Image (cartoon, rainbow, N blue to C red; front, side, top):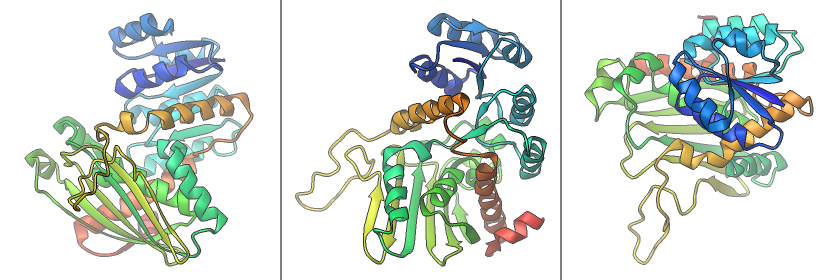
Length: 334
């Protein structure tokens, strides 16, 4: 098949490399506002360069991968759907929930699949965790803990435009909690602090946060996030039931140091970047998209899924600023 790529920054170039190595992909058509980025990708992967999204869609592509700036996501998703071309778009669907809801309305009832990029759904550990929960082998759940700790903050310009840590970082935890447990969040309580980079505080954001999510069956989920984790990139999940408990990410590249006498675990070189931690998951995610394009499977992460994680982020952001519990119903009606 022939796949278009819109946006060739860090993640777009990474996707181009991944797609070029998939057996199902015969050729790529790439486009980026910066001509040099498109030219470099074309030279590296033998791709055709198009000078606009419209030109990509007119180039006979079977599917399109959107890795452009967030502001462009709504227009590019709807343009692909209007053209009848299946589309994979990195999260978020849009910069605001209102815009995301409008995208959902625009594509509702259309027979063109849209897949949103939440790569943890394709990580082998999280896949196994979901299977364990769904099989009932853990018994009734009572506690879930989900952690995302970055080794260092992103640039100040990114922070200023990100919408806050819950919307651009924690949202991955929110999505994977829903996906693994199969439950919905009904209420949140969030707190945060600033112990590091001043530019994060100046942007009105927190650099370290914690949130307690109440799920619709009474399970409690605890989410921990930080922009500062000098030892590396730490993504983990614990799931505790009345019969058994399991963990994702408890392996030798875990960026945590044990101080127990005689304990050498973890013994590997810690993960230091999200592309390192989730290389295989990104490949599996795009492989799944080729199956979506081929019509052999439905979208594994829909716009509706992405918006549900977004509503949790909205509730946590409001809770952080107003120092109170917030229900999901409240933010949906705001």
